[in-house]
Length: 125
Image (cartoon, rainbow, N blue to C red; front, side):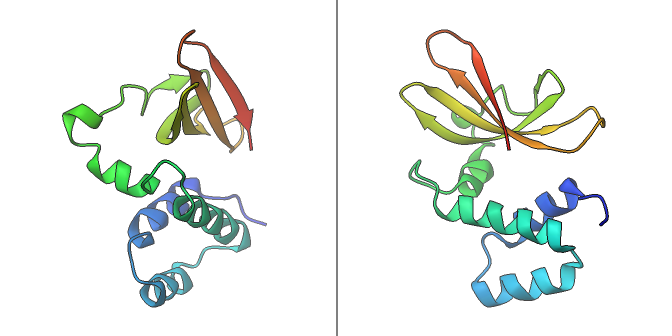
């Protein structure tokens, strides 16, 4: 099995998440992603579709160019993990999607920043 190319999966997700189902499937079929990439892509699409923060995550990302929606944590490093996107907000804090940046291995994680204390909790997927 080849190594998963996270950047290719992420780029494909960004391309297809707003497409109608038929066009989406055509682009996926032409992508050449292997089984591991297709599984990851599907899980990302499922998470985007069931987002419980009132809007899908992709829509929030598109609007992030608005100054009042920018989040200084996106793009920053927490240890070896690069924060990519906000995936949830609640009374206890904010949860972000992150990927392993140091090249030791590939992985995705959720990092929660607790509202009051400024501490973070790390959950590996």
